[in-house]
Length: 357
Image (cartoon, rainbow, N blue to C red; front, side, top):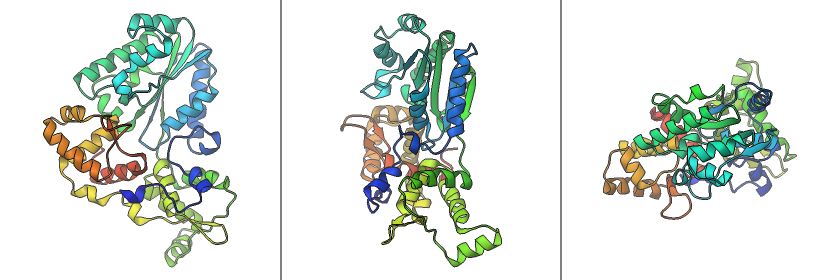
């Protein structure tokens, strides 16, 4: 897993252009611009009297948080609310976080009254991470969706959710039915990745020199294309069209030549994800799937979700932590998540196993 850590061989300013952490800068938001405009249009229509509520759906690394970050900068509602507690989301809960923002008690009556005082757009990132992945969590999610419906006349709810989590949850609770519009962050084509990656690269002022081999020349001739199109077609296949994975693979495969130009390549080892995951025990694979779908969880939550006793769960967590695939969010006792640098590789490996379908 260590080889997926930040590409320290690149100049610092170039590394910053290809960070996989969510961005708050328009210049680095180079994919899904049409989807951003669609979300802004939805809010404008709501302000003019149309029904509200929007759901943004995408897999990890697709840019859901970045889209919300940029959306927050451009919204026009009289009041913008984005609950984000200092503690882990699931520990505070969605009603608790809203209560902190609004300065009222964390129950539906006071919260509804506080929201009714002024038209508001409320941004909720990673909806699946606010509720426990158990029966009680489902009941709380159902209560929250009921609250969304009850407040829709004066509150526009803009929520994001991980695609795999939605596939599981919508079998049990009617998430899409409470929104007017669903925006899908679909996998990007080679051409779309070309535009997104090169918009970031252009900020460096460096030239790009694409690798030329017998194979790329042969493919280019056969398809009547060029090395650039061949490269991004290969990158789209290697990354699954996921912008986060593509950015990570670009950064890891690039080298800066003595003349200062950038020479990209695709590290085939990285494009395979983490092959050793295929040799893990089924419980360890299930643990990674659970954390990918529903976000960081502590050992007790994971044990309940996977119907294991605590000692068994502790053994599997110890292995995954030692392998660099899980780590505490803030301190040793906090929920366990997949480290940002290795998340693209973990997702890729799980998809190759068919474990995320």
